[in-house]
Image (cartoon, rainbow, N blue to C red; front, side, top):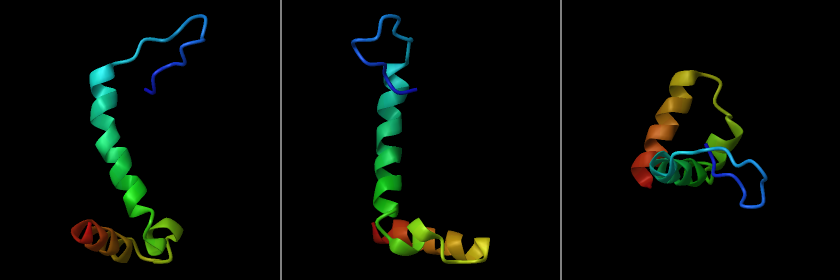
Length: 60
Protein backbone atom coordinates (compact mmCIF):
# COMPACT_ATOMS: atom_id res chain seq x y z
CA UNK A 1 0.00 0.00 0.00
CA UNK A 2 1.21 3.48 -0.81
CA UNK A 3 1.51 5.85 2.17
CA UNK A 4 -1.43 8.23 2.62
CA UNK A 5 -1.10 11.96 2.11
CA UNK A 6 -0.34 14.01 5.18
CA UNK A 7 -3.45 16.24 4.77
CA UNK A 8 -5.87 13.34 4.95
CA UNK A 9 -8.26 13.55 7.91
CA UNK A 10 -8.23 9.79 8.64
CA UNK A 11 -4.94 8.36 7.34
CA UNK A 12 -4.86 4.63 6.73
CA UNK A 13 -2.13 2.53 8.30
CA UNK A 14 0.58 1.14 6.04
CA UNK A 15 3.71 -0.96 6.52
CA UNK A 16 6.77 1.20 5.82
CA UNK A 17 9.10 -1.81 5.59
CA UNK A 18 6.99 -3.50 2.90
CA UNK A 19 6.73 -0.22 1.02
CA UNK A 20 10.53 0.09 1.07
CA UNK A 21 10.85 -3.46 -0.30
CA UNK A 22 8.44 -2.63 -3.11
CA UNK A 23 10.52 0.26 -4.42
CA UNK A 24 13.31 -1.76 -6.17
CA UNK A 25 10.70 -3.92 -7.90
CA UNK A 26 8.85 -0.84 -9.16
CA UNK A 27 12.15 0.56 -10.47
CA UNK A 28 12.85 -2.71 -12.32
CA UNK A 29 9.45 -2.58 -14.04
CA UNK A 30 10.05 1.04 -14.97
CA UNK A 31 13.40 0.17 -16.55
CA UNK A 32 11.89 -2.82 -18.38
CA UNK A 33 9.21 -0.59 -19.91
CA UNK A 34 11.96 1.43 -21.59
CA UNK A 35 12.30 -1.50 -23.99
CA UNK A 36 9.64 -0.75 -26.59
CA UNK A 37 9.03 -4.40 -27.34
CA UNK A 38 8.13 -5.08 -23.70
CA UNK A 39 5.99 -1.96 -23.27
CA UNK A 40 3.90 -2.58 -26.41
CA UNK A 41 3.83 -6.40 -26.21
CA UNK A 42 4.41 -7.05 -29.91
CA UNK A 43 5.04 -10.77 -29.36
CA UNK A 44 2.03 -12.97 -29.90
CA UNK A 45 3.30 -15.97 -27.97
CA UNK A 46 3.84 -15.94 -24.22
CA UNK A 47 7.10 -17.85 -24.56
CA UNK A 48 8.57 -15.21 -26.90
CA UNK A 49 7.47 -12.40 -24.59
CA UNK A 50 8.99 -14.12 -21.56
CA UNK A 51 12.21 -14.79 -23.47
CA UNK A 52 12.57 -11.11 -24.35
CA UNK A 53 11.87 -10.06 -20.76
CA UNK A 54 14.61 -12.40 -19.56
CA UNK A 55 16.95 -11.00 -22.20
CA UNK A 56 16.12 -7.42 -21.14
CA UNK A 57 16.78 -8.28 -17.49
CA UNK A 58 20.13 -9.77 -18.48
CA UNK A 59 21.02 -6.55 -20.33
CA UNK A 60 20.05 -4.42 -17.34
